[in-house]
Amino acid sequence: MDALGERIARLRQAAGMTQQQLADRIAISRVALSHIEAGMSWPSERTVVLLAGIFKVEPPELVASTTYPAEKAERLPTVACRYTEAELQARLREASPKR
Image (cartoon, rainbow, N blue to C red):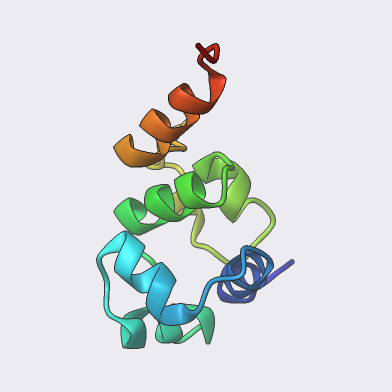
């Protein structure tokens, strides 16, 4: 069983983000993210959903086979938004035919 904080740290590093950059994207402090990654605190359900969206996975997938409490995992939505509005608009522009 993986520690959820370690999984989040690995995904963050794979995405090339610092703790501060990720914390800014999910509107928590860098210290709060550091505590999550170190296993000193659990992320809220809201934070798990935001992290899942950033890492392009579903919330249950992010916490599966981790130390995240089962009672909290049961309350997670099955899907998460994977793009911010700005990312969505950029993708739509990229996909539109060139004139």
